[in-house]
Length: 321
Image (cartoon, rainbow, N blue to C red; front, side, top):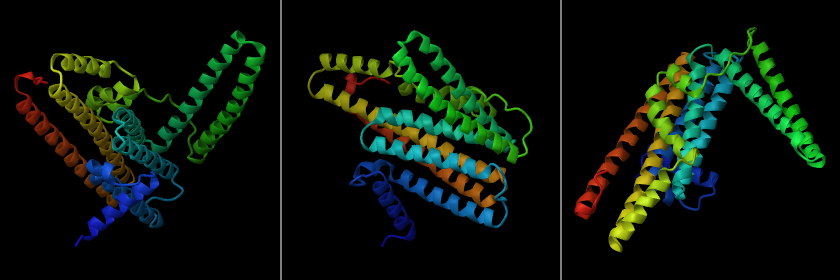
């Protein structure tokens, strides 16, 4: 008989499939534990946060708590999409999604580090400033267009400008409500944010790997070239073995990037609890974070075993790396 945790996990998987219009959970099989952990972690976080606000451990008038929570949930929504990509075989797209998840988590960690309301205001104001700069560059191009085409673009620019005006008003109202009287500070570059939260190594290694697919780097083209050469030199079953191994490595790498990005989301929940001095929330985040570390280590061990079996099976023709 399944215990309560199994029933909860099964329900989480069923809801995930319904939410993403998946006919079966079978394609999700490699990641069922992570998907269930995300659902349970979010639910536990929401319950603990509800208790904290109703008990006035976090006053509802505190300016940042709800918006930072929304940022965390947005990261988990991206993570959901990444696991759908893995389930459908879109491993390159999953790598792109992992970067979006990690950047979302990084912003949360940076905001929670200190001066929560101030940094959240800087985040909002930086977006408004960036959008105004983009509008100005867009408008500069109109003089090089035929007048009829330029007029259409000008209308769209004005519509967008009205939206940005409203966004700026919201940011200023947030600042006023939070008692922020200083000007908005520049939002740090991503490397500076990683360094600020003590994760510069992940910036140099993990984040750099996530950027490969997003930038359409030549890595996959090199792999295609090598596979083509191997197929020419070792046709038939040997070539098929190499192709299957390459596909397996691609799937493993994309999965590892997703797992690491989800680790960061749970770290956000832990830091959220620490920032607001709510032990129950911090414990939820730290427990899920440790579990994600174990799951990531597990897939690394499995991949190493698969590589060793491949080398033993292929003999001298197997690559050393």
